[in-house]
Amino acid sequence: MEFLLFTFVGVVHLLSLSSGKSIYKNDISRRTFQEIKEEIASYGDVAKAIIDLAVYGKAQNRSYERLALLVDTVGPRPSGSRSLEKAIQIMYQNLREDGLENVHLEPVKIPHWERGEESAVMLEPRIHRMAILGLGSSIGTPPEGITAEVLVVTSFEELQRRAPEARGKIVVYNQPYVNYSTTVQYRVQGAVEAAKVGALASLIRSVASFSIYSPHTGIQEYQDGVPKIPTACITVEDAEMMSRMASRGNRIVIQLKMGAKNYPDADSFNTVAEIIGSKYPEQVVLVSGHLDSWDVGQGAMDDGGGAFISWEALSLIKDLGLRPKRTLRLVLWTAEEQGGVGAFQYYLLHQLGLSADLDWFGPWVTLRVLLGIACGLRCRKRRRAPVANWKDHAGCASCRG
Image (cartoon, rainbow, N blue to C red):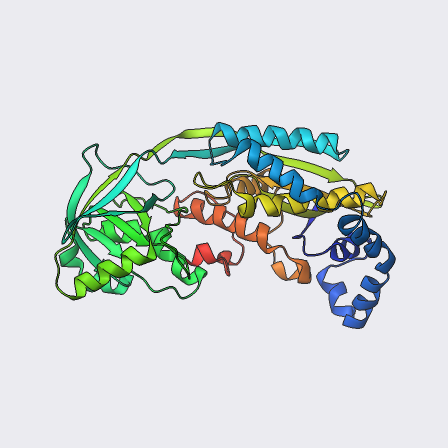
């Protein structure tokens, strides 16, 4: 079975992909941009009907109202939680009631981590209670916490230069924000690099270009053969403050307490629905988002919005009685935040031919799905499990991290 990976950037693209025109690499080389432009333009009337339905018709604000109902009802949906599974069951029923085809759940084993109570208090050179958020999969501290002197660094290179100073301390990373793909490596790898030089814990400046004293969470990874140490993100403001203190020669001491725990993998599901193609049903255009979120927010943007506009794409086409030539498949991933776990297990189940040259996907290649799968592949590659070898996951921000 052939899959065309696609993210919902416009219904016209959906229609052109589903038109039955071949988009294989060799055919792309024989088609001019003018021919592609004319093909897309031929869907003008249909695209207008879809836009009118979405913007002015009965579907006006529908995806927003659907999303609001879910996040207000269920709230945060962290991997392994009952709230995530409740959301999955609600969405399964919603897709059935919407009249989509082949609605079903595909089993996935997913990580289960809970943050518990957490705190960080600066004891020297003054008392200061810090806002922190533990990072996904982090271990906790002993009940009494970890009280230690701080070493502030701005890069992994500085940490290596000052490695003798790091033993027995809490490493604070005050790395400058360059861009997400460059800077996120400190969140993903910070604990491992600190542990390699004997640190007791690591605190990472939140990966953000702007802050209102708001710590960020996200996934981090341990490495085989390296001691696991607790790790959390702190605010940009506190990271900068401690950097200033350290530059003046102040001794900084922090007491860190984290109740984080990792539990055995939990049962979950990817949620799937389709509009079956009329001419090439075996060829699939994949539209996707993920239902899980972190525990400290309701996940309306990351990625409730992506999931619900993906559902809306199929709803609009169904409501107008359109039947594309290729199958449109909606997949709502589980456990994306934990490293694309749902996408990776979908890959294993369906055996996507991604080990071949990716160029044949053409301009419609789905960054959303590829990044999700790449993260899953990356996690398993580091655990020395067999993975597909497709361009060494080049281009994935998290893999580069």
